[in-house]
Length: 218
Image 1 (tube, rainbow, N blue to C red):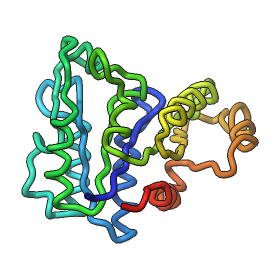
Image 2 (image 1 turned 30 degrees about the horizontal axis):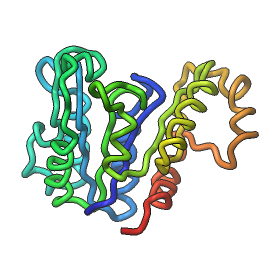
Image 3 (image 1 turned 180 degrees about the vertical axis):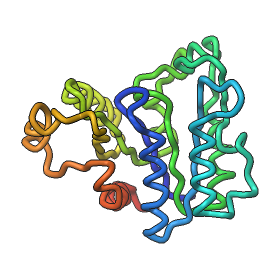
């Protein structure tokens, strides 16, 4: 089995796909053949936008993936832009479908980046949340968080959920040009609380190496 990295975020539109693309390049530089997987994507009317972006980026670095199709990369494609529970009308989702699809991708790579949908507590069906996926996949997790006012609360809540679920993880801050107040209003607390602060744009190589350190030997 290849190494597995699950990319999640504190909410939707935080930068999971942007971060995953950077991770593809970072892990490739470390010598890994990279695969990508998006188990669920909602808001799909023609093509799954995030899954397509991930697939085409990964193909540039790992041509072996050319034997796959976009349907291999995104197992469940739902038209309504909502939580999977709602977009799938509350139907049960068998996680073994994702494992089967993931193994097909893993045959072509050394490390697979799995991108979640929304945040950790997004409901997949009546019994499962998005946080259940990294546990099911036995994947180390990168939590992508924002740099707006309120990021302290959002980040700590997601960290607690990961800790309570015993999911190995690190945190990366996706600071955008408009987040000019972050260094004054939020960074002092994070600097106090954590030994290392990772910024997605500047520290992606260090993030990749730190994620590798969280993966249990197989």
